[in-house]
Length: 351
Image 1 (tube, rainbow, N blue to C red):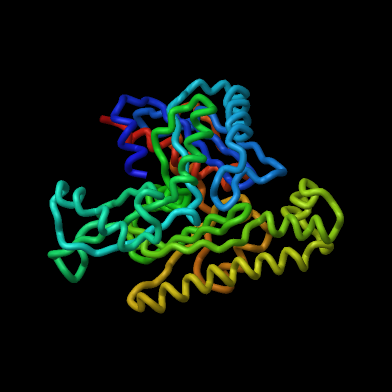
Image 2 (spheres, rainbow, N blue to C red):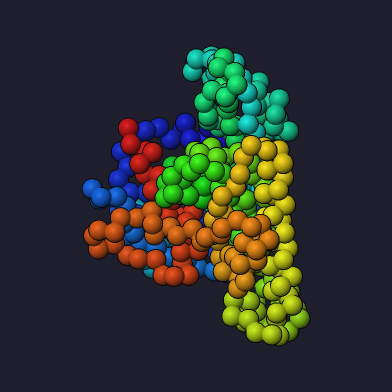
């Protein structure tokens, strides 16, 4: 991704449109900066019956671009500078340790390091890296996080923004956006914390220690699986199945319980694996977000199974309480963290 972003150059940007393209939905958010912080100027969400993404790649760029343009026109959004995020399960992240190098030497040698840890030729990927700091036990070495994605995936997103008449200036990763929001709102804590983004097709899990992501995992199960199971079992369309899922009665209890049990079990396994590999660490909090975290009973089941306090991530805590900005509806708080955080990255574009 480095070569994509470097071509963009540095420019003065006052507003940045956050666009979160999910498997079955598009979310947009536009923040305004004030002296006290950010406030919401515009936000919107639209869901679709068909899949917008397949294996992280945009299925029909022209369709998604058209829908995005229509959504922006409905909201009266004229801003052209945009940010978006790739699905984390399509991105390869590797944490590596290297001898301390100056910036110029690191730039010259990073390609060899990328080739050694990423299972694709350099010609097929975009990549970036972040210096995370010194290795705790070896002052002469530093930790780097290498992030890479296949060009075909990145290019499918770039095509959408080009067709929509937008300038894509920031390309992030969805779980990085969520973890950064957790850190911005709650700050570094003495214990490790889990962020779980439970979406339509994938559950993304990250474990943070201080300001660093220590572990990530993707589980290929999300709320759409439960919706489809309810639709099949009760011979209803997906919209009715979605309603039954979120406000369920005894007729779908067994299906909901199975889904809740599967997600909770996988989160518990992730926590146990992390603690087993880092015996000196403890996990003190789990933050949930994503539309499928709304499934009744899921929060309580995770709390009971892990023995760890569970809370919903509230992106409104990221915003200033002063001024006349919009407020997020109760349910929208579960869908908007990524788009909201992406819009806040306008701060990163300052010269």
